[in-house]
Length: 409
Ligand code: HEC
Ligand code: HEC
Ligand code: HEC
Ligand code: HEC
Image 1 (cartoon, helix red, strand yellow):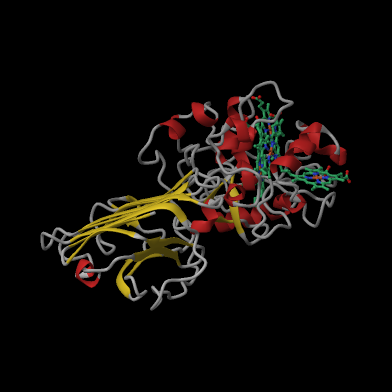
Image 2 (cartoon, rainbow, N blue to C red):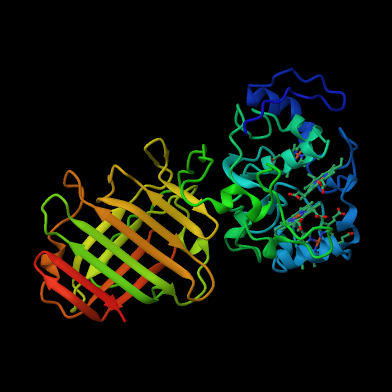
């Protein structure tokens, strides 16, 4: 899905063809760049016209159906689009007044780790949306947005699959699932489906990215933003206030030296859990700790997964899913952890799963011994910059020197 577009010149400026040197292009584009990317550029007629309003008039005046329904999708958070409260203008496609406000691209684009030349801040890019316009006979959308321009890399990255969350779907908007037509569809338009966010012609659940389980089709090519990680560790006693599961299972099997196993399942997380409650290990810097405590709340085991933005076997170790994140590392390099599933959802729908397997002594051992003879235990998953999850395991099934198995309730 990588598109190479010749640099198309709109307006008068004689821009060089094949504008690969980003800095040069931006310098040349600067005057135009200030004006076009608004919903409505009331001042300067540049290029094809005055912005999205040329064809999509439904936001004008603030009281038509397109605007009203977008307010609902935005959870009445006016600053997801407006710069400074409801009604303020100009409404920009790439920035708004919200915290980390990404304008229209907050829902119509995805985070490729780019920086906006206009706002100087992190932005989302709407590569899929532009392919939808191209398919509708509007190739001009690809022109200014070719590789190396407007903060986009050269060559352009592969378009992220339909199941990868737009930034506003991680908490700011009333939307959490790009694969859900029920969530995305606007009641007044002709069809009953929502967006085709990757522009491959198949919206929502009709897209194979949404229906095929397993690895995502697109690998994020962006490098993670270098947010300094706060050093964190399992506390001497369990953390307070963690999201509790209704059901939990812990298995520590150390019967065969060198082939130890770990399994943690926290099921039916009681409150509603958003993907942001897990931080962001794909484009952010979130790392995780699995902390095990004995019946008297003494730390018995600690496993660390600090792989935000890292690559495992040529792919991003972490991948974004509509409900949260998945981790896979066949090399077992982070304390023997092979897989993790961190999924949010409505009350009692979220879950956390961690599966570990020892290989070449990467996994901490002696944990079953530390839990030997215990009649209860506590398991927690901590994140470095978001929530923690877990609770007490009141039913101990086995508490031997090389095998500990417990569950809740
Ligand atoms: C020259 C006319 C034109 C302009 C300018 C234009 N659009 Fe469109 N837009 C279209 C057409 C045509 C379609 C396709 C309609 C269809 O296929 O049903 C479309 C579709 C869309 C869709 C639906 C995408 C989907 O997945 O179904 C969105 C969202 C959208 N446009 C947003 C924008 C934004 C944001 C801008 C400004 C940056 C913009 N458009 C500018 C003509 C335009
Ligand atoms: C999805 C993006 C989006 C959201 C969310 C949104 N708006 Fe808007 N709104 C727009 C756009 C685009 C315009 C048209 C701006 C223009 O014509 O330049 C607009 C126009 C308006 C106008 C008319 C302004 C004028 O001078 O014509 C009002 C009033 C308004 N919005 C109020 C609100 C309020 C109040 C909220 C929050 C409850 C809100 N909007 C949320 C995108 C949004
Ligand atoms: C809170 C998330 C969100 C934001 C922010 C947002 N949109 Fe949308 N937009 C959607 C969703 C979801 C749809 C539903 C598509 C459907 O039903 O086909 C949509 C549909 C559209 C459509 C197509 C309407 C149709 O007739 O199908 C246009 C045009 C559009 N948006 C323009 C914009 C513009 C311009 C902005 C910025 C001012 C914007 N959107 C910001 C979520 C958003
Ligand atoms: C005249 C050049 C030009 C054309 C043509 C153009 N854009 Fe843009 N667009 C810009 C600029 C400049 C920005 C601001 C980029 C920034 O600062 O991040 C932008 C930003 C955007 C953004 C938000 C951020 C991003 O990178 O995705 C969307 C969405 C967008 N444009 C959609 C469209 C669509 C849809 C079309 C076709 C209807 C289109 N653009 C055609 C110049 C253009």
